[in-house]
Amino acid sequence: MKKVGIVMGSDSDLPILRKAMDTLDALQIPYECHIYSAHRTPEEARQFARNARANGFGAIIAAAGMAAHLAGAIAANTTLPVIGIPCKGACLDGIDALLSTVMMPSGIPVATVAINGGVNAALLCAQILAVEDSELASRLDAKRAADAAKVLEKDAALQAEIKN
Ligand code: RP5
Image 1 (cartoon, rainbow, N blue to C red):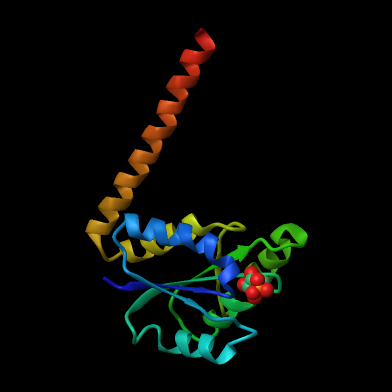
Image 2: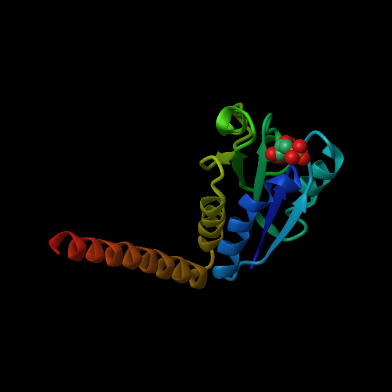
């Protein structure tokens, strides 16, 4: 199976990426995780993106906060699908990173998830890889069913509480 590449701009983004890693682990998807910054280590970020396809990656998650250029910088250097996670920083509630990540010019797409959306970033990567992997698609179906069952359990508990 192809790997997912996870790149974050700083170790301060790590709690958001832990959710992505947990989600990939649960779906048995291999990944590599790195700290490369579009601003502080631009050459390392560029090399990672340029070599990603040859190095066995099938999709890349790029997460950054503030003036979040990492996902766009990665996307500029690969035609693998890039999922951008805008990370909430100390100011502006993550709107700065959201706009920096989502507003890409035509020709260089970044599929941007919600602010701090680590789980959905991982699931989008899983769904991309599952296009050519029926076993992974089955695991995704099972997860959807399990998630739905949890909601219905909570509804049943709510109904019981309301009646009493
Ligand atoms: C961004 O700046 C990083 O992705 C992080 O979200 C933010 C702050 O980085 P640190 O100052 O915490 O290293 O490049």
